[in-house]
Image (cartoon, rainbow, N blue to C red; front, side):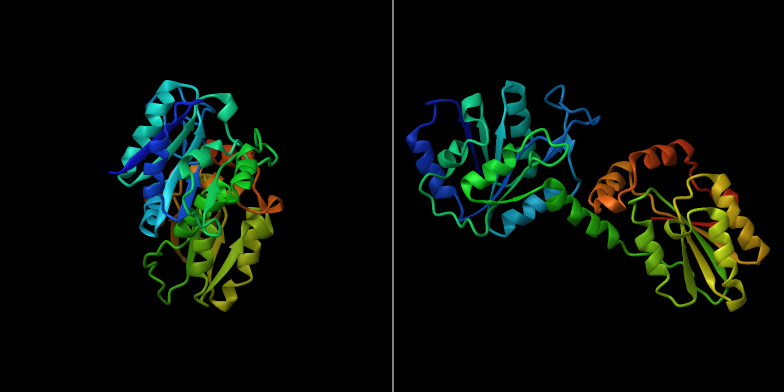
Length: 321
């Protein structure tokens, strides 16, 4: 594995290092901040506690970085760090990718981003295609951001700037939404499908996919708000022989039993589709929505508090995605 490492610390840089780097640097650069852009602490704390305390911020990050490398980008990490063990952690993380990674670590505050010296030392006189190069960072001056240093750094070096949510989470969400739905035995028999999952889990995408079959009708909690209203709306379709998809979070046995009762009353087959996307991924996808469409965090706490794992003992066929 080829890796060039720069510790930006006053005059410690050597000219021959820069010359070597220029020879290795590709015209297209995919540059990234480190903390809360590529990785986060394991338990969600703001700051990690030791060299082993890290996880990928999004599970698709290694594959995305490898894809960029295959597409002819130089992968670069620009980061401000004062602790020696954090330097070791960054090297370990980069090594785990098994691709060439350029790492520029500012050790003194005078060199910290948004100072473009990090970029200048790395690139020197190399011919960089700035139209295709970009920088991804989380300090963009948005509401809730601790600073705008990543945004200003990208401006200072002439790169387009993206947030981690924009660059990684949207791709991850698209991959999740693209999950292939297994056979649901969409026979001629009438059936009730009860969706289960966090807000943002992808359950509504699955429900809509099911209802592309004209024999099914979609009853959404976002529209009717309460289970009695959803059941009343579903009743209007019984005489038409329609199968029903109840799309809501339905975390508890008690809530699911309301729809089970409806199905039994009308002699419908009962199926539960549990979209088991994790809390972390579901909430990150929720935060990607337009502000007016975001579900408040309390809804996730309530779902977790009342959640009971769906079981065939409740009287339905169970499918877990």
